[in-house]
Length: 81
Ligand SMILES: [Zn+2]
Image 1 (spheres, protein in one colour):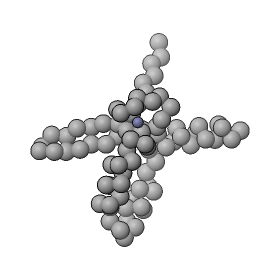
Image 2 (cartoon, rainbow, N blue to C red):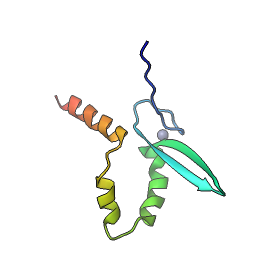
Image 3 (cartoon, rainbow, N blue to C red):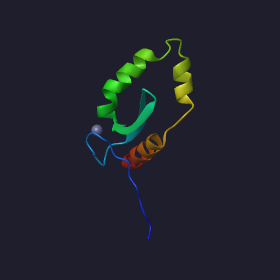
C-alpha cells in the first residue's frame, strides 16, 4: 500500500497551503515547526530584518528551491494548461 505524508502548518493545518520548516533555539533546546506563508509572515519579517543588506542573502536564497516551491510550481503549471 502506498503512503503519502503531507506536512501542514502547525497553526492552521490547512492541507492546501505549502509550508516551510523553521527552528528556534532557546537555552540549548531547539523547537522545530512548520508554518504556511500566512503564519510565517511575522517570523519572515524578523528574519528579513536580520539578513545582511548587501544582497549576499538573496544570492544564497536563489541557489535553493525548496520541495514546497517545486510542488507549487508544478501546481501553477498544471493550472495554466
Ligand atoms: Zn497556517
